[in-house]
Image (cartoon, rainbow, N blue to C red; front, side, top):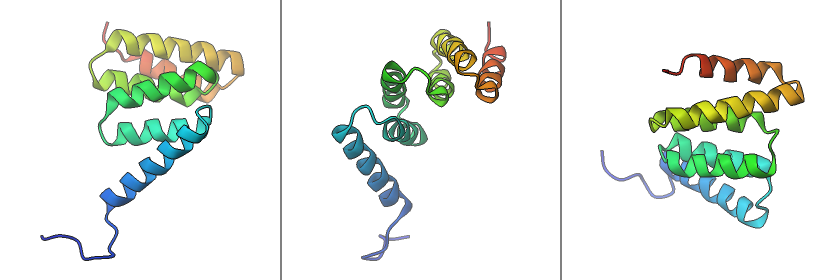
Length: 118
């Protein structure tokens, strides 16, 4: 397999473009929860878990009710072997989802917490 043909967009190009768009959106509005979450997910998808975790934490800092950030933040921490930190973020997520009444995400956070090693 050689290089892609000129004008052909590869998946890598699409991912890079998506990440750049999200980075620009966050730069323009750092408190845009949707853009910040999307950027964190892009980092996680490419294996850059440290950056993903930083974005999830930033998001939680200004939007503590963004339930999915707790779950995916915990998943990223688990992938890095940071189990105690994952446990803490899951627990904080359970508090947030209890407060907001988001039972579905609460149950997912609880399940993730329950399978962590002691």
